[in-house]
Length: 261
Image (cartoon, rainbow, N blue to C red):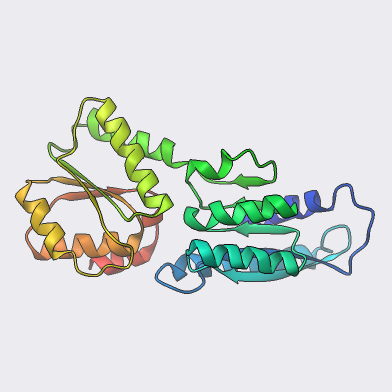
């Protein structure tokens, strides 16, 4: 909450620099998956932004002007994210705290760059977001090439597993993370026994788990979100596969443990 408040204060002030015009209020926004299977993260973003705006306005706003919050639902869908970004443009939004999924942030950032809207993502870890050369697009989190590399080094340095499978959900975040893990793992002289793609939203992983069991996998590295990861763990245990699961920051939610059972 404190970080969200600081981010909104700084971003809103930056949006006002160089302008002598006065507004009755300043429109800012947050955008993420307010609906869909990742809505738990959108709810966190919306709630944090609402509290931050309330706190800032209670202290007099920005240079005496109140903040007004717009909330955009991209459902972690790239096309919907672009639509949300264009809606923000039409509403005169000056700053966007979002998006959550890299697959949404990357295309939306092109709209924000063209329109001069400041974007700061609290969660999009795909390196492309900040490698496009846009001077108004930032993030406050780590990158996939760092966490993927770190995870691979941890596995090798600590002899975590003998047979490793790498999974990804085909998203910009999931595949990017899995590929960075694979690249570093291979660079350290370790080859995975399986590299498989799943589809976000899948519910039945029976065939995949059978393949993992046949390969004798003892570690699954998952590039993707908590929903599919939780189901894979749950179904693997039900089918007698006790392989460890390792993943990235998208598993940091209590729903993951609820899904695993």
